Structure formats: C-alpha cells, structure tokens
Image (cartoon, rainbow, N blue to C red; front, side, top):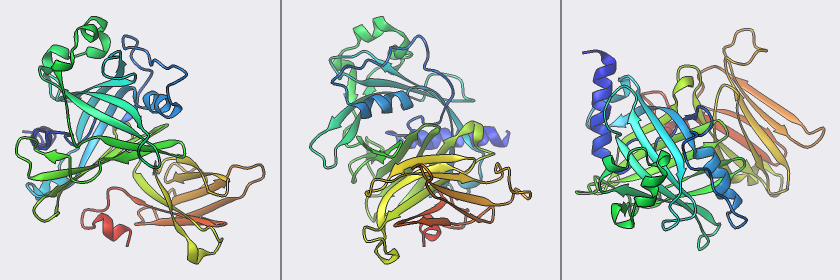
Length: 355
C-alpha cells in the first residue's frame, strides 16, 4: 500500500471521528468563477455589505490540503502525506431558511464515492454582539444522498423542507471583518465531538480573504482541557511553494512602544501574500510577506516582511531574516507587526513560536 493511500485512509478515519467539522469546512484556494449551474448570489438593498463580500469570497470550487500537527491517537500522523479535499460552496435559494444561504459539499480528492460532508450555511448579522459579527449556522441533512448537488438543482431546492435538515447547535461560526479579510470561529465548549458521545470540544478558526482561504481545527478533552488534536488547512496548489503565517498587529495610542496593544491578526502566505487594514488613527496600511518568490534577493534564502502606508507618499518599511524563522517583525510609527508560521516545526508548539 502506498504512503499516500495509507495517509488518505488514516485521514478518513480522523474525519469520521471528528463528526461535526471534520478537519475543515472545505476551505481552500478559489479556483475559478462560481459554477454556472449554481444559484446567483441574491442581494437586496437590505443585504449587509459584509455578507455580500463574504458570500463572494466563500463561493466557488476549492482545492484544499490538510496537515495534521498533533493527534494523540497517532503520534506519527504529522509525518503522513497530506490529505486533499475538493469542495463546492454555492448559494442556494431557500427563503424559508434565510435570505443568504450557502450549500457546501466536500469530497476526498482521491477517494471515490459519496461526499464526505454536506451542510447548509446560513449567514446573518448578529446585532446583539458588540461588535456586530456574521453568524454562520450549519445544518446537516437527514438523508444526505438525496440532496447531493443541491446547488445545481432548482427543483430540489423547491422540494427541500425544514424537516429534512437539522441545525448543528453549538457550532456556529462568528466572523468579523479585519481589513480586507474575514476571520473568526467557534466560541466556548459548545461544539462537541463526536456529537453522539461528546468527549471533546472543537475550537475552529477560519480566515477568508482575496486569495486567502485557510483554517485551523483544535480538539480539547472535556476532562482536563488538554489539546489532543490539531490540524491546519492550506491551498493545495501552493502547498509545496508557499507557507502560511499568522501576523499579529499592535498599535499604540500614545505613539510610545511601551504602550503597544494587540489590534488584530491577519494570515498571509509567504509568496507575496498581503492584507490591507486600517489603524485607529485612520491610516490605511498593507502588510506583505515574501520568501523565495522575492526577485531582488540573489540567494532567494530570506523571508521579507513589508509594511506600506497606502497614503500618497506614505512610508514603506522592510524587514528580512533567514528562510525558516520562528518569527519576523517590522515596525512603523505607533504600530508593529510580528509574523510566525501557523504550522510550526514538528518539535515546537504554537506557544513556543510566539514566546
């Protein structure tokens, strides 16, 4: 049996054990325009612009890779081949469920058969939260095979009834806009795994942006809150070329470095990945990360972090370090940014990276 097939079968077992999320909700790189057969994204003047933008970024065909960082059932899992997932996410017309609903269908790339997961995603603004966030509620199907390819079948959408679906309580995603990205995840210990016999709770993080579509799943034991499983998702086509970094941005109201406080987090790839954001003082900035794609370093053996003030004649700051750093940092007036790999070296934890 090949290493890839062994890894695929092992990953399938892990995905079944997770129950609610698997190791992803089918996140990956947007590969093209939304499928023509799917329902158009319906917007009205009352549709919040945040939801319009999120639906535009989320819809499409996605090619995802999942890398296991930690698994208490299989310590050698992190060394296994990557698992690959193909996901279709498209709008569907279900006004009785909500004005903005997506259908998600996820299938292992190299395992034939029925989809591994099918869910509906209802998007709404939760105005009771401060700040307001987009709430994404998930629904499963009582007979999934009957509704396969729902996004491309208007008659099936008319036939679907509320009794055919069930909400996955406790696993809502709460997303906020951070610059030109959306990020967030589950809250608390309400999202359990497996649902039938909950022994663990799931912490799920999601990042969506233009060219950014990544996720991280962690499972903790109820008994002692110990981390027992962790995985990270990346864009498959860039998996062997780019790495994903999480960048923590701080800002100082006084302008003094001693007063720097956390402002927001953004995730970018190291092959020209970028994120735009605004500071409380009104400045618009752009963060860019390069590595061996950077054309001005003859050795191609460096990681380069760039901060740009987007105002006319705004300043640009560059910082560089070795090609495999645990952190890279750069600073401008009243702010700084520190970036570290989302998937750390095998012998290090996330906490060690950010120490």
